[in-house]
Image 1: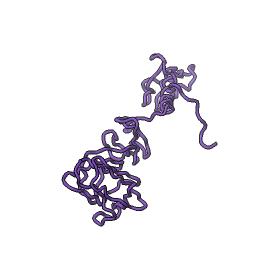
Image 2: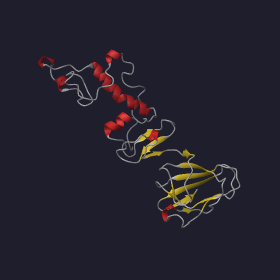
Image 3: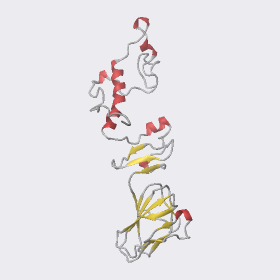
Length: 241
């Protein structure tokens, strides 16, 4: 069979209920040799003194360290095997020099959605609007779009924009895509009779930003009706779907 066999499921982390005196948690990151020659650390593991016979000055490894190491190793495994994903961690981000491209984190505000890093060494906080992250779901924004030609989108996410046509009909000719497959939903937010539309293949926008739609107009749509566009990079166009 392809892939790896299903591992034994962890019901809980090792030493999950160990007494405080029987577990070192967390195992410290920096070397402990100068502090306690026999103490484990993430840098050294079990130090050289633990590999010497006590008769020769060695120090027996600590059972509390063993419990701590195994708790730290199996805790994340149990978490992942339960179907959960990690949240953003500023300390981890700093220690490793940023999240890798493709790293996936759960959104703090909505645990049903995730962030995916689009760059290597990502040092921004996605939950605080940091750049270089992609949301797994639509991002709703009440921010008005500027102009109707070569409209600049605020980021790489899929967006729902409420468009107010109270002052008159609005016809978009193009949008500056942030990625292949990006989706935007234009939703009419007012109850006026003014139309909301996109203009197909309009030279008012740069070629790579234009819309290519069969039925570009909602005419005089009812309030909250929407118009959906997806960017197809191979066509260099926004298409209706």
